[in-house]
Every structure is written in C-alpha cells, then in structure tokens.
Image (cartoon, rainbow, N blue to C red; front, side):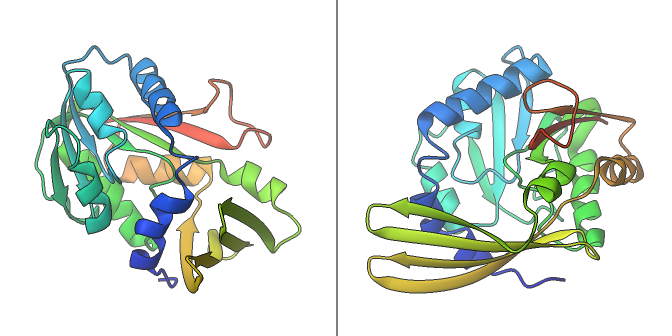
Length: 243
C-alpha cells in the first residue's frame, strides 16, 4: 500500500485549511444535492461514513433523518459531537464498519473513497453493501478520473492554500501504473513547518462499476456533479449504487 500519513492529513490542520471549502454555505449546498439526488423524504436511515466533522450527517439529522456517522479521526469526531447530539458518531474503520444497519442510504462524500489498496477499497464497498437493506442506495461523490488526468498534465502539479499567514502547498503526480494520485503536502502554520503524504486511488468509471458489482450491488449509475453526463471536462462524479 502506498504511504499515507493519516493523522497528519486528516487532523486539525485539515479543518483549518479547508474551512472555506467546507463552509456552512457549501455544506448546505452539498446536503441539498444529496437530498435531491436521492429524493429523500426525511425519514430515511442514513450511514455517513466517513463522516468527517459531521457537516453532512448533522444537517441530515436536522431534517429528520436517523443518522449514524463513522470516522477514524478522533479530531473530526470530537468536532462532530459538538452539535446537538441527534447523530450517533462512532470511531471505526471503513473496511470493518462498527454497525450492522440495515440502512436506507450510505454516503461517501467529498472524495472519501480510495485511500486503501485495491483489495481494501473493494472491501469498503462490500461493507457498504453489507449494512444496506435490499434496495438501499450508496451515494458517492468523488473526482472524475478522466478529467483530473486531462487537467493536471504535465505533472507534477501544485496547489497553494493560504489562511492568513498560514500556507499549505500540495505537490501531486498521477501514477499511471497504480491509478493513484500521490500528494506531498507541506504546510506552515503558526510558524511551524509540517510535511505529510497522502495517496488516493482514482478508479475509472468502468473500474468502479466492476468493483461495485463484485461487492454485490445490483446496479450503478454515474453522472457529473452538475447533473450532466460525465465527461473529460467535468471534474466531479456522483455515483448511485443500488443494493
């Protein structure tokens, strides 16, 4: 498995530098997309895994859904539990979810899939299938492999995020042999330099369709985040897989 500094990648620094990206306005918009895409009525049982700091799960619970959130980061879970307590937040591994369900819906949002090797990534999909009722649906939101490869060439490519005097610099390169985006992260916060690395598998649509079928899903549909057909010019994918 490619090197992945989990605690350094998904900790307080992440929340600090992604604050604008994961703003209240963006989180509200994300929930609207989830509700409209799945046609949720307000009484579904929902698994939000990984749930991060609860920005999606807590909003869905406020709409009347029964929500369970699972994440491996204690930092994120502590923040998630600061809300009104309607959601049950559990620490756990996506490859062995600490719940049985059955759920009506499982969510994998904001490129939360692909951080393990291929066998374990497929195990994650099998776990989603295990905890969904028959006819339940998995909704994934993730990078479109074809668009990101087209856009980020030649490699390596970089991205810089600034929050006041703090700076985060990502240098990334796509490995065509493994199908993974490899990212070295350098950040300066409060005058301290920290380095980390994360690696994300970016399956093509045919690959992910095959993985979902192997996990036991009966059907999968793929659209761009904007509702149009996926293309090399549309960066985000929505995937609905039916159990």
